[in-house]
Image (cartoon, rainbow over all chains, first blue to last red; front, side, top):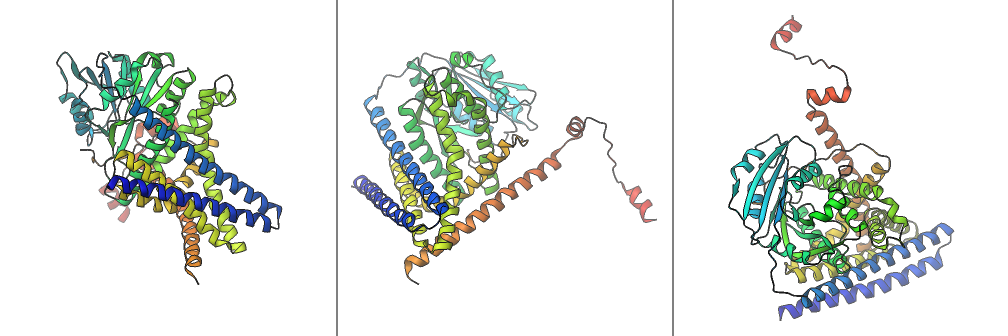
Length: 439
Length: 69
């Protein structure tokens, strides 16, 4: 009964969203007819294109996500594959507060053949000595700690890969904790030789403040709508740092992790796709991570992500213009460019236009309906994702604040990051300070 | 003023304030990072960056006594 009611809520929200879209577009048509200047007419056309793009994005992602869910249910195979040795690499820099719960998560995996390598990247705290106390080798499973001179995450990962015995490499952030069956679920996808990597699902563990609840919702929506849809065509564009598994042979072919961007995971994924490999997503393989608890830390994280993604796009930009020869990588890169650059610019520009319109022509009721339209779409998307992940439906209420303020603040930071990347302004890695919440 | 007009004005005001807040928050973040970087530099790092020998003077109690005389 409860499930049926939830589905009714989802369908009703979607129907309301469609009605609001129709109403808003009709209103936009009136504004276009009444517009006196060419600039105003041009702006209305841009807003129309923007609105259509966003709605199409929503609908396409949700459609493919539903298809992927159906496909997964149909493919359900109970046979568990455990032959390959998996090397779990945990690069760590000043992680003494979170390393113990993280290693507990790795050690309590249901998958039997694992080799764990903790790579201390020149930490200034007790990271290495803590990792050392966990060392063991029982023949099937082992843990070994290494310490090297500080050189960044990508170098630490490559250092681990060089020493790995496994054919499958699992990169795990030291500030994340894996669910007990995460490795087992990821491994199953590698029975398909075309699969080079599988992205895990990320869940926010510290959902005790308003800002972290908003991020929890963002992660659930981003993963279950965007990544699920991408997985339908096996072209997931980013393997997240907290949990991702790679075929070692494929990594070797593309030269492992590179050191010239701040998004080594994104860069590696793009290289794999460019080489014709497929990338999957496993929604049930979960890594719990700590989300930034204050706004400035959140901006720092998003600033680094945006610049890292842009650096990876810039590095592989030649593929943007090869849609016929390399359709997969070209499509993925255009999509990433849309998400990281066009979409934030369009959203802020749209808001500015609406404010101008409301102040000059008094059409402020349109602003209200336009905002409600996107919020209702967000709520519908959130309800869908919360239903499939069996999360609390109450989290969907945060979509209102998400649309009203959160996304604008994040997009402003993304725009500034894009401008700084364009002008090649120097940046540092900017490690986030963790509070040790994953325990 | 009817409810729709009131809500429209409210959304307009929140949108405007959020944009201003977003810009301020970004510059606050940049200022914080700048401050952190200045505080966190070590002698070796500064030496590497400047490519020249640096001298640091420390003020001790004797100096303050001399200055007060």
